[in-house]
Length: 300
Length: 252
Image (tube, rainbow over all chains, first blue to last red; front, side, top):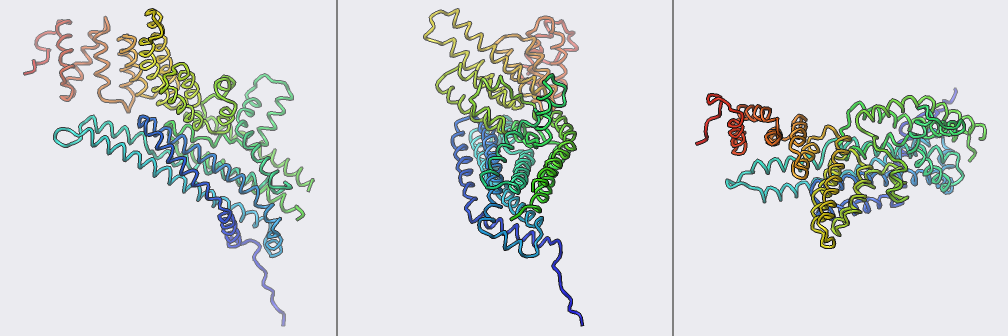
């Protein structure tokens, strides 16, 4: 009689999900979500201050400040939370417990990345909900005021009032804000994958943070470097070489700064949105794969 | 590990080479759709603080613009017109696609700052006060012209431009053209063709064009039978010698 050994599967979605949920729980225990309170204060405080402006200015400011703050918070969260994940697991020796089990390293990284993406998705969703709620509340207040003040003699809305209300509605919420919010999330997801990649060869959390923040700034200039490299602008050969390296190594983060123009009233065509989202997904996938290559050979 | 690092760096370069054409294409698609058109250059650096410039470079253009707009609002409360003009210039450079910023900047300059300049108690010389007023009119006009260069499809900005030409420059011919331009844009207000016709009536040599447009409006919609339109139409009928059979009926 031969005893049959049951081997665990080489790849398991369940294992990745368990690690993702565990990562999310760990981050939640670190009280990371408290930053949402700051966001709420910023949006509500901004809204109260802006009440002295015209409704068009108020809505414009509210959108500018809210989407800008969402972008700052999610980007910082992505870099800081991801940078400390691996060093923390090494310091707590949790990583040894996990990798001693039949868990491949690529699954471990996938679980960590998925956990941080969940955190970013929840944070973005909560911030969007707060932002849209404040926008809706202010829109409703402005319309109610207009209805009270601009009623005709017969108690019906005057033509002027109807036009005014239509203008208020057009200035407040529009569906283009939704792709704007998704692009903010994509940028944060890219930064999380990038920081995970950096942390696979960094020696400390601080190092990963500094490198990722530097990449963040350089990434916003990548498009300019690319232009200098490819558009035949007259520069020295060594400068051309330098800008070529910048264009090749760093991600183009300006491609994910669409919110600036969305709040100005630009519509987002579906094709453009899908191409931008596709580029974001490609970055996340490639940085994850590169992280796996490095992490698989790292001595722990 | 060092060998892997070299391999990963080469892979990163290969990925870069593969994605650069994609990014070039996406950049073109973005610009065609009106995204990423703001120029963040040394001229902007000279206008805003170092931190503001870094923030603008880091993808927070709209955020910086909002903060500077609030600063401009505070300057307005203190009637610091020169400072406001500088801040508006920066805000509109950061957010050139926001018609609101161009409109408000122009309004503050051409209406508020110009009136304040004319009423300036510290300047006894009326000529200098009027010259300052004129300079603010020009500044307001410049904001709208630059705004229209960046947003040629904004009916609202064309309308504001027409109003400025009419009320501050009394250039009725140019105002008529601007109102017409505004009326041709899909989301235009229904009264804009009427406004264009009213300005044409004050533009020497365009009376026939004004009459044709007013008559067309009168015939097309009873909602246009407003006293101002009827009065101008009757005035033009007399001026152009329109036959009695073609004239509009007298209102009861």
